[in-house]
Length: 482
Ligand code: NAD
Image 1 (cartoon, helix red, strand yellow):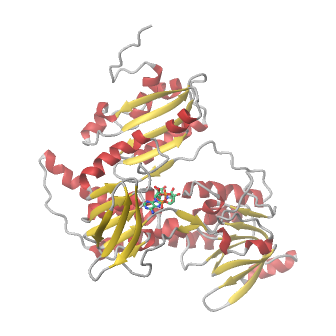
Image 2 (tube, rainbow, N blue to C red):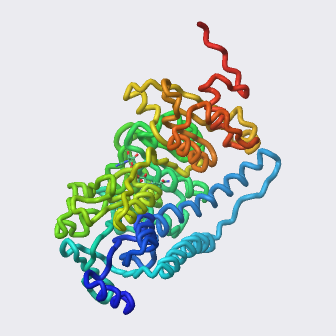
């Protein structure tokens, strides 16, 4: 603690800090910044040397920098069909890694600067509770005790490890290792057809790897509406070495020249790979902070339950982000971070968002928000669908990416939007309008009558609403009899 802060603490005669935040990912740094802006004396504890957590350092941000590279390579190659050839790309891996690291550095450096301006004490070390108002922080060269009035637990999650894998062999990677971009393997096996697996597959395929994806369940990205996943599956089915569904990797052995993966299920046998990426989910870090010494409940799976104000069972300790439950998404954590900070500052905020959008930044992107069609069917909701195929979108045709579609789900009685799914380039940006429409309680007519700029992909949202309304003119939909 700085001398100025020590004096302040001494003057108030209580704890070292009014608020400590453990973990500096999108949830943690947002909570710390908001709390400082609300006037609290804040410490932000982070085990790694830079702020930003998984998202900024080894997750969302570096992966998106590399996905951009992949996109440009793919687009340049696709131009051949239009009569413009660029030839084979030359990839300078060191330079590419340098660009990715520079993007990460700008953002994490920006966070450090903003923390300083806000007079937040950033403490590097591993925090552990020692009591309801006490933490120990083990740094690289010292161990200190910190007392606090309130705490935010924002310790995130980590990659799940599969058994029977040669962990420690550098050719076996989790997403963090893969983003290090040590080499572009000739043959890459991706275990797990979820968001991380498919985004990483997308990067390495564009950079030149022959990619095989293995997914345990019958569908890539289980839980997402099957029609939304289909255009992605069709595209990667043509480009990747193989996509094996309903298949499990039982073990990976080490050979002199390869990693040998053993398959079981719909696809069986064994095959050699140069590298293997394991992306089978993430597990919360709740069990790692000795929460019980503060009296905070942690589930057997490592989650920390909270109420709508993000309070744990110990009212002065709140928790946010991956550690409080699914979906493990940065933007959910950020939102919760603001609620948590406001609650700690004495406000009445609560997490009352109706929906949290999800995006797979694959090629094409897949994005969804609110009720999925599978959920609507399962729960026997009285819903209607407006689906606009991008094959009828001038903009999608102009960029030669018409495989996608925009689907909106409406409550038939209120005609309000309850869910949306978009597959296609930039779906992740487009879905934000649908999230806003759901939050605002928009009816189909509101969306259809909102003038969208032409020619854009965003028009597809208004047109999907028009399909539901029966007012669409950019498609011919035969009138139903009777
Ligand atoms: P996930 O749970 O989304 O997907 C893991 C996949 O692996 C599942 O489809 C599962 O069926 C499969 N699987 C499990 N065991 C397997 C096995 N033995 N063999 C083959 N397949 C197996 O997990 P993830 O992709 O690792 O992502 C983790 C979390 O991070 C998710 O909550 C995700 O939402 C989040 N995330 C989000 C983004 C984004 O918003 N763009 C990006 C990355 C990660």
